Length: 232
Image (cartoon, rainbow, N blue to C red; front, side):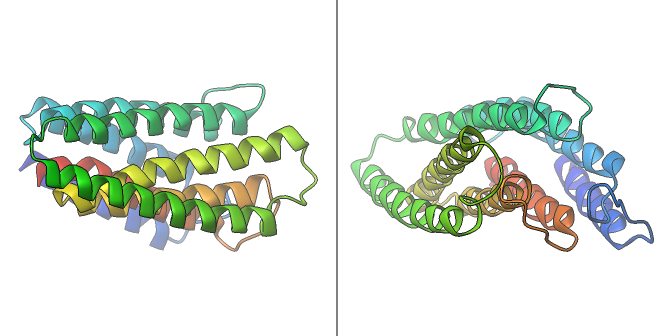
């Protein structure tokens, strides 16, 4: 029941934020920073409530909760509530750690399975994800980011980060194909879309109308898919 309340709260808060009469000019979107941070914090609390409240697959819920904590730190950095010399690099590092923890959740979950067939499906899903996600993101990066004015190390770093997100999403797809965790697979894909938009905006210097709303629509959907999979 508590998780259903969290879910409704997050949906309501998001739609109030995006449909309200206000507009956050600094963020190029309708979702004001307090609403974004409250959404992120509510996802963090939901992840820990699921883990500590008796998730059906505790090992998955545990590592996802740790990953959401790292994501929350990344959100604070990107919102400039944690001040660092370079907001983008700091955010990438925090989310790099978050994705590593999510991958740990997926692989640890597979170790609970003794049958061979799910492992075969896992490997097929992983390969399919790596080939498809990485190819699409590399093409998009070459077309939209490579020629930007930013320093080469920033551009290369953004490409490495996006490939890491694709790796996480590929493991999520593998888990979905192997064990039926399709919400996780959808969450991984939405994470690729969300972070690609961020890189195109912040590194590729491309202007997208109401970009922050699109980022947070896909980001919140990604985190929900990954977090709420553990109650299926």
